Length: 340
Image 1 (cartoon, rainbow, N blue to C red):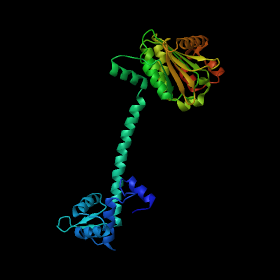
Image 2 (tube, rainbow, N blue to C red; image 1 turned 90 degrees about the vertical axis):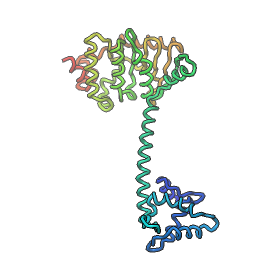
Image 3 (cartoon, rainbow, N blue to C red; image 1 turned 120 degrees about the vertical axis):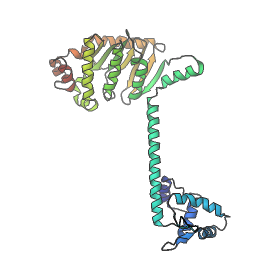
Image 4 (cartoon, rainbow, N blue to C red; image 1 turned 135 degrees about the vertical axis):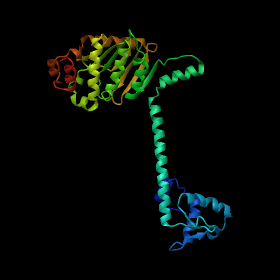
């Protein structure tokens, strides 16, 4: 029996079963062939190998058919080499060279298998990551009962899950006449990927919804964070797109709120809202009017008060950017550049 744990681990990683409590059949036959070879190795007939296997295992009644069945996969794995393939008296060789060749083949096969498994896992990971459990729960209820039910509240963990909740419950369902209120007063978790998130709000505005986007004044002065976490090319395209939307009368505005930070939120009319509870890790709660109408009304009222006291980034002058410590920054360059 093999006692070297590191060797057992390595062979197991190659999917070569060596056995732990009881030696595997492959190792039993391979051990016997190696012992009977001599030094230097001399190819042996099947009869010689079978006799040695029986002598090595006197308490086992091993048939020739059993040894043949075990020997076949060792040959296919190239751990054992056959000489005289075209003759009736084949001879078998196993030594350090055949083992090296066989183990190299096992390694190649194992790596290919692992690559396939990784690809399958990545596909499943992508599929599972994109699932919205709220939507899935509604679909399951409908499939089981034929009735539609809508969740009234849920806890949302992480930026990706928040993005999915907003997509399915706000940006993709908003229509003409709806108002989307978005407050982003905590930058750290929301800057990265912010361009793609903004595009979903732009899509909603293109569908006729009014989008009111309220940002912290820090976004103007946090130049290093903006440059690090946001795609400048995408941001340039977004700014150009918003200017064109506003020219044709679509309602999309981004305003800078100079007051004290409160909380970040996204609401659709006064029917539902997502409130960010903690910044790191990002945790939010999604709730509908059926769950807590007073909380939603208060959130909307607070937003509208802040909105009225805020200034649109599309109206900021070079002097305003200088006052906020953002002169020459990326956002100043993009916004002022579109007006020249």
